[in-house]
Length: 527
Image (cartoon, rainbow, N blue to C red):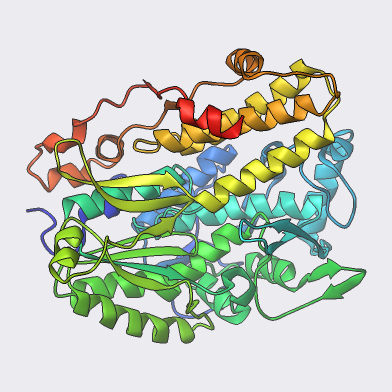
């Protein structure tokens, strides 16, 4: 086999494009000797023509791919007017304003002039990062999640800088990292996890949760990690400005040497960068050198799922993982970090020991369950998290109460958008019952809202079902089975099987499938 030295499920590691050898590198690079780099140093290998933004980033990626152990010393010129303009175009028009109160529409009125001024300030060192505005959004468990809303110009410069850094680090990041990366999504991470569990000998699952990750990141370590590949001190100073800008809350600006503001444009990249050095590289080395059996890893931002063949491997990894994270000012949440028996033989093994059904774990909004197909074969089932669905229904209920007297078409269009968005994410195989229940509860909330408009309103189930048929989408399975989609996106995994496709890849059709209508028991129970 081509990849026999890898002990993990190969499906967890994504394919990377082949190197384009023979083409000149775009950026000046030097051996990774230290943090300081001579930004004024010239290089004969540096391309003279910068071209468009996409072309420049493509050359950076090529240089990063070819020179894995060298660092870039000339990147600042890529924060150009064209790159700033592209960064501005990628911002949402209705994005929340920062402490400056400036919106995209206001900035766009004199866009060219504003970008020229911003570019000049950035390059002459007059640019100053403003404090982020602290806001809180509710979490499904009732707690509040702190979000840092940066000022508009900070968002623009951060996005432009993040694009340049991503071109470098996307060539370094490992395949089992999926969070906030171009071309990767939450469903890609879940596909990798499910294929890894079903196709390899995985009997134990470590569901790890890093305590307050974005608030506890060591800024000192973060800068050291950036300096592994970036020797341009001007880029480093930009990142330091954002880290030291602080957070404005209740009229008080707080500056800390820990954390990177969750919600800022560049924070996802910095988070991936931090965990790449603090966890990913160590975990990959541990998997190759220490694991006695199979081991799979899937990471989406700070959400970690690790699968093991042997319990002894799992417990050793957990102990050493705690020590590893402590070295970089991180810690595991003791209550949310669990080691459970899960996999193809979990049901039989637990039954033989006189235990109940295998425990479940949650990942990216779904609960993962050990189940069986109609033919009695092992199958991982995904169900939408109950608490997340209840929180969503509660938000819908509050909005319907606020808009109780709006015309029915206006309410219907809004509900259509909400339900469609929910289905687009949650319409995965084995989750049809949850989709049906969600649509039923939304329809029932709409019915109860209409009945409260007037004492004489007699909105029956027959009428509300007609309205639901007119405005609300039908629950359908929109996502293919994980093995089918993952095999297409990551053909490297199929090579390990000699080019043969497993029969279970297509054991279910992945076209759109209609979900069964509401059971009569639902209607009678809620009427």
